[in-house]
Structures are given as C-alpha cells and as structure tokens.
Image (cartoon, rainbow, N blue to C red; front, side, top):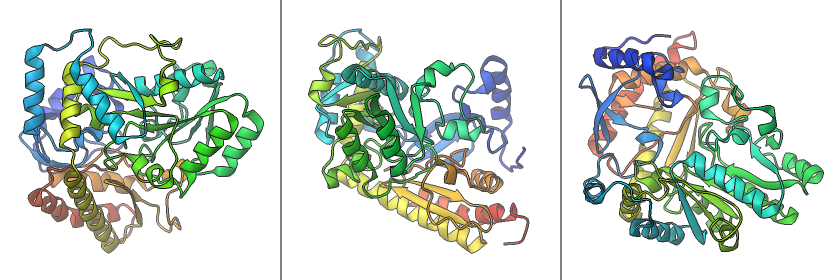
Length: 448
C-alpha cells in the first residue's frame, strides 16, 4: 500500500530503510511502522506544544500525543525545567528518593488507591497486579475481555486489541499455550458471559482485569453500570477487580476513567494500574490498591516484585510536575478541544457521506469509519470494532497527514488532544477535515 504525498519525506524514508536493517520492522513498537495505512513513517526530530517537526522539516498538529502521555503538550517549559534539574542531580541512584514519595502521594490523592508501587512500563504494572491478585487469592485463573490490551504480558496477550488487530493476528507466536490456559477471554460489555464464567469457575478466578474504558480497540465505553457489576461480581466470589488505567488514568478526566463512573456510582477497584500521563512522557508506570493487598508485596509480604529503574528520579519528577500542572482548567480546555475536533470530524464525514461513529471517554475519542450500509449505532465490543472500512481510514489518515495533521496510524486507536492545542492548532485541524473526509468517501467506490 502506498500513499502519494506533496510533502518531502526523503530523510524519513532513508532513516526507515536504515532502521529496517537493524531493527525488526524498522520500529520499536509495531503500530509505528504504518503497516495498517501504508506509506513512510515520519521520523520526528522535535516537538513543541501541539506541533511535531519531522526530519524533513514538515510540521504537523499532533493528535497522538505519544499515545496519551502529553496531556500538557510537548516540551512544556515547567516540565522540561524540572527534568533538567533532576538530570543534573543524577539519572539513577538505585535508592529511595523524594520525588517517588511525592508522586505516590499525588496518585493516592486523585484516585481510590491507598498505596502505590512504581514500575517502568504499563506492561510491568499489569503483570505485577496480576501476580499480586493471584498471590492474594491463592487462585490462578484470570478473566479478561477481547479487545482490551494490558501490555505484552504472555497471559494477557490473547485478543488484545489495537496492536494485534492492526496486524490481523489474534495472538502471537512465542506465547506457549500453557501461558494462556489460565486466561479466559470474554466479549466486552457481556454481563451474561461474566455470570456464566463465574458460575462455572468462580472458585478458581483470581481476578477480572479490564481497561476502565477500553481504548485499544478505539474508545468503547462500558455500558452504564458494567464496571460496577464487575466489581460486585468479583466481591461476591472472592476474586479481585483490577481496573487498568494505563491509558485513561489522569487522561480521560482528572481522576481518570474511574472519575467517569466509579466516583459517581460509589464502587472502588481492588487494584488499579497507571501509566502514560503519570510519567509525563518518560518511562514510568504504577499499580496500586487497598493497603492490605499492597502489603502483600515484598519486602512487607511474600509476593515478590522488583525493578532496578522503578521510581526513577527523573521519570517521577516528570510525572509529578505534569500532575501538579494538570489543573481543572487544563482538563476543561482539553475537553473543549476534543469536543470541537470530534464534532467537526463527524460533520465533515457526514457531509461526505461516510458512515461513521464517534465515541468519547472524557477527553479521549475515537472515530470508527464503518462499512457502507452499517446499522451499528454504537461500538460495544471488539467484534463490532472490527466492522470498519479500513481503506477509508487509510485514505483519511494520509489526507490529514499531507495537510499537516498527525493522526494515529491505525483505525483501532484513540485521538488525544492537549492543553497546548490552541486556536491556531485547532483551526489547522478543522481546515484539513473536509478534503480528508472526501478522500475517505472515495474508497467506497461511489461518489460522495
């Protein structure tokens, strides 16, 4: 698949060729390779505010935001200043530091967790939460939902959403059958399936893990009361409810995905995982929960978990500064920008005759370009998320890219705005939408 462009891409193309010789697929995370949309991945040289600049000198309004972390925008001056000061003091000590205490206190203040343990990635956080759940319950079975991604943990990489869906594979070689034998995968939003699995295996289930609001098959909202139902079902059977907020945490709202339902409905997960925003763009993640459960971790308890760079002083400084700057006013601005862009995109697609759905979770949103004649009124699960007209998204993506707007290079991903998306950036996006919508319409084989 190729895509014509009027923008120079020679240096990106050269770097991609060189990278492909020394790195599998030329990238260090698969979706970056543009495999789902075709064309040359843009190698970014710098970023400032809402804008990216690639190695060929092209500028783009960024609606990826490093896949979520850049809530404040790129290179926020106060975050950069704090990180530079932290680096000047040393990059890693292998000892406790004050920034990790302050960041843990900030996370506890915003969420229902009582204690937190840091890791270096969201994958480590979910892996550790699963280990803790199994250790706490003495059980082995994990229940997850198709389309929810919880990192590349062997036991959780079945039907795992965007990355695998982008490349049309349900799982991956290298994960032995034994690693997933104790994982039960259910359709998302399906209460009856949850009730059946607990009726048959309730005394073996250690935990149910779900994204607070799934974002790895596009934004797929939990139906009203679904997360509360999961929490109550787990409690009734002695299992733990693990809410994965690596993406939604401090991004969907100030209190994350939990702020959209749990904070309103009055339920609390047993364990939660966090990442992205809480690292301020540096490698940092965490898992946390009730004090008694977290007390089972070493050195207090018997469940072992460790990491040489966990709680790294530079990463925790970036995260702490980001969260302190993420005020109510910031969330209001990001929400308003997301509303403006998502509504404008929907209007342009509608005008061009492209069947589509827009789904929101706080400041996060996704646009599903559907097959002609689709009767879907909402995407509820992974199966429905797969009913997209992928050529339309590829055409839409490249038209936006050529107009200077950087979208996720996969139809199964979330669009992210930031506090740095000002009037100039927003108007640039809005100006690009009509032509991109017409390009998408042309893929259906009839004039819009």
